[in-house]
Image (cartoon, rainbow, N blue to C red):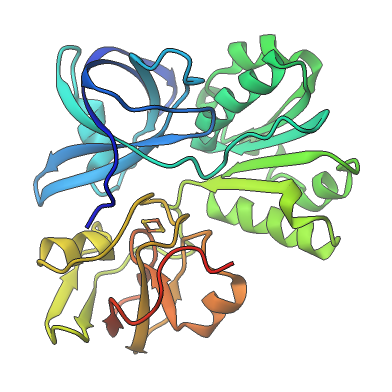
Length: 329
Ligand code: FES
């Protein structure tokens, strides 16, 4: 059950390759309005072979021209079919877009900013960097990509940041030294991060270990990169007593909704917590892929965010209305 949000019908105007595996897609709004801001994402409705589905993609735009919407879509292979659908769209094709909240709004109250992007996490960061630079802020960016061919928006970022852009290619230099990066952050700097869950968790852990202020670390994730390979599993919903099978390429939320269960959701990215379910019983562990639950909550195994997190196979029992949803502080 999706929360009420503005919608628009859009037509794909043009598409191009921004880097290996990343498609840049520009849509023009035909009817309705969806507003965006730097760091925001939008939800796209689509028809997949398993039925209707929604997927969220971060916008590249700064929100100043709401009649045009640009997103970058990474081809997930294997994936759940959403990115493949987006890659199959041709100029002229229409799609419904739903406005989403911005979980990483930019605050302009600092002089210095550090932006860290990994992989497709570069999409919202490109808009954030442009907004910060146009308002005269000092920005340093570390952009981690698998290789030079996988790096998108290099020329745009380079012209915005000059020497402030540090490219890091895993294929050439190995993984980023997160502890060195975090320990070098100057006091008063606000940090924005977006990338794979492993990178995000490492930065958050290093940040906490140094006792740095939590409100100076802002993040968004593309929560499709759990720590384990996705497995099929079964869940029994306590309220209905019905058992639902979840395929490896399907989210728990999709399976529950498809089977007629009502679950609240919004971001579909593991950020808002609206889809949080209570786990009453499970015979395997949980691959937590969200950034909403605290480490303590994740370790307890008592809840999970159904839009991204999943069980590691087996059979579990969940309660949909057993716990309060949304931010818990
Ligand atoms: S819908 Fe936001 S965390 Fe799942």
